[in-house]
Length: 484
Image 1 (tube, helix red, strand yellow):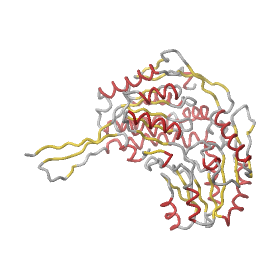
Image 2 (image 1 turned 60 degrees about the vertical axis):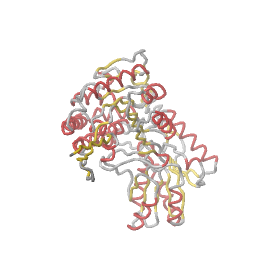
Image 3 (image 1 turned 90 degrees about the horizontal axis):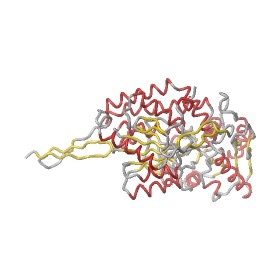
Image 4 (image 1 turned 45 degrees about the horizontal axis):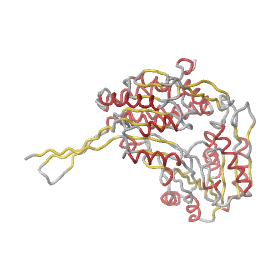
């Protein structure tokens, strides 16, 4: 029995399940078939206000913020254990909701979500202050304290992982949370509300409000009872979030869009490089901000690599996400599919060569698009400069290291990048010059909760994961005691 059969998609506020104040509900669609699978409550401003008030009351009563880091860590360890114990149902929900292949949901999404909570459970007791040596006749020290109520706003592409990357450090630091998942993909957030409660997180510490961004998201963003905003989403919406938060002087963590360059030098192991390149643009049907949709190839191996891609990419299994053999599932919603079609049509209009793909896949009424490789576009093309967010790879040649770096840094984004080379000095030299928050060498998307992740330029600021994330959910207080 699935979670939406047990719980009729209600809001989770103050430890209780409830309908939206006005009774509104919204549909959840299976993107592999284009059919409605359930409905969930659609929160309005009154519901968001109730959730923030519940979070504030829970924070003020100290039932969570007053615990020691070690005690909070014990609860978060139980959360990680419950995620693993319920892995099959969580994977099925994520696959149904987002269209992800079921095998990847288990191996990637569920596993990483459990790892997130486990990592921050271990880090919860590490919020040590510091004794500061001063010339004053005084004892001076610092304390790390939670910020208060955190608004966590997460996108449609990795609902489970990106919720854990925010709730994990926020809870470890002693904050309370109001989580607003993407309106297209709310199911795992509702399931996790139950697991968090079962693990021993006190009522009101985590609240989940499902609904639209323009209504529920906006109300949460503007609520004066929110002390910090943690947002993952597009750069355009991120600018709005930062502007509104800035008016109230609220701290914000922003993980925004990406359009990463993947550089293949002539000395790279091409067999390994091709595997990393394909993974970098077809994983999650290309719907991930840290994807590598721009391939830059040394001119001497450019024709060879294009030929390998032309043969290999059409062979990547695409189809029903419930089939364990599937690697590429559907787009998460029809509007995302149409956006990809528009960019490929633009590429054709500009005279690009479609090496493979370039069209929908008609299957079960779902939102499928064949993985597509595009060559012969100028660097100023919108298809190269903008974030497509689908299974599309553009390929450009370069003549030397300087040109490769210049092309890689030529877009407004700076989230991730990659280098394929067997030359150790070149790997470090190029990594140093790339404008990105993370650089992968000879692979793609190697992530761990211990490694901070975030962007520069239009890809945002602040970091998720690592001790840096935990610090982002705390404030520093200085205490100075006179010894006179």
